[in-house]
Amino acid sequence: MSRRWFLLLLAVVSPSFAQELPDPAATKTVELFKVPKYCEGVCFDHDGKGYISWGETITQFTLDGKHQPWAKTGAPNGHKILADGTHLVCDASQHAVLHLAADGKLLPHASKECDGKTLRGPNDLTLDTANGGFYFSDPGGSSVDKPIGTIHYVDKAGKTTLLDDGLAFPNGIVLAHDGKHLYLAESQKNCVHIYEVTGPGKLSKRKLFAELPRKKEGTPQIDNQPDGMCLDAAGNLYVAHYGMKQVQVLSPEGKLIRQFDGGNVTTSNVAFSGPKMDQLFITGGIGAEAGEGGLFRIDLGVKGLVILPAKK
Image 1 (cartoon, rainbow, N blue to C red):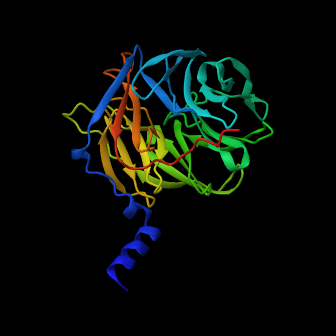
Image 2: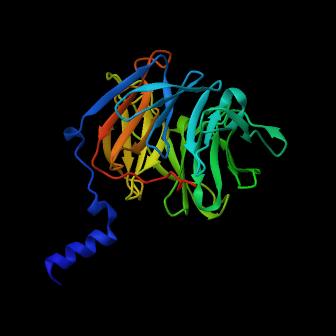
């Protein structure tokens, strides 16, 4: 086999070869703008406009950093856009996954109870576009000492089903591009789990996918709790690592392969966007969580996984 054909074959069977991650030392984390409070829930709509959640507010922004208030819901967090342009937003203060119109007006809730019990505090969600549903985490009131956190599935008919419980603050949640695996960050155990998806809203028993690095004494790092997550087109998992000022990158096998500067100590969420879908946007707090929040960007040159469903 010629070298040319060998390289072409390798590029086909090894997505990470065709999309090699940059050296963190060669990248720069740029601040786009600040908001008055710690922020998270970054996502993008069909027109390329972005959204972040802070305090009781959702702010809409453009890629050049211009921004304006879009909606106020109470305590918005995880956020995704549906094919019809409406929005799903986790809101702990309303104990629900909200459904908002394209102009930010509140529609009937997408989920507010499971098995007759009110949700405690939904945090993050991921779309199951192929089947018209979505998965979400509910860490409300949970901790290592009180592992009552849960994850759920909402089908296209609007029924909410409990999928797993006994978790110490389940947080970021991401469905793989093939729909066959679901990743979940368990914040207070500093790890990421993986589930096999056996059908829409049906999961195998959770397995440990990766344990993450821990904070180092004598550094600005103050904690080590995985938060929001996203995937690139090669299947690498990007984890906003709260308290570490880092975005950890895990290979499809769960190996730590990169650590990028999160731009802020309380790094909270990540999402890909940009004209070439190769810019990583990062949210978090500047200083303590009670202080300002900020949106940051790294021009990775690595294509992210497109999670936005085709517009209807």
